[in-house]
Length: 97
Image (cartoon, rainbow, N blue to C red):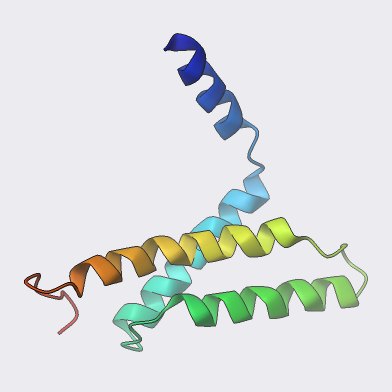
């Protein structure tokens, strides 16, 4: 069991800070879309914006195209989306009413 926990910690430490920042940005943008714009499908705008930003960065020549940053943003927004789906299930009151 200790080997498994050490492996999980090693994998978490291998995540770069930029991908963690993209995850948090995707999370915050999805929360903005959910609470301010009242969008119940809040991962699509984050996915589109992440792709546009990454495409613009690679097109300007600043960086190479990196799918991992898009994936990190989408995973952050998907965490919020799963919460929305759980709250919209029958019998559970939705918090954004």
